[in-house]
Image (cartoon, rainbow, N blue to C red):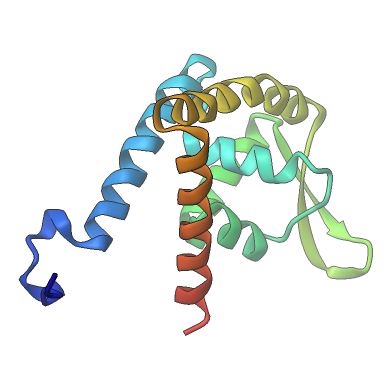
Length: 149
């Protein structure tokens, strides 16, 4: 089978498009589940990352939850107003501010966890465990290679 020039592919067959479309659909489905609790996907990511009890700086959090700094700042400010997270100085470096979940945020994160797990289980059931695991492995490898160049 001859390799085709990627520039000749219709956009709907290009990797960047397919990844973006898959992300949009998976996120839309997760968002539907999370809206039962009135929580957008981005806020769920923040709650999930902070639920390990380790404080995170805004920079670390922005990178991990896939948001730019201005958007993250707006979301965090709302979450602080809703008493879900709080800011505290890093005990190792008082110049650095870390974000932590409040008790209310921890409670919400616990309520959201089964919704996110059922979403993942639904994908696995639909796509198959072996295929889902392979897809995760391939995407992890793709991300690692893309970020190392």
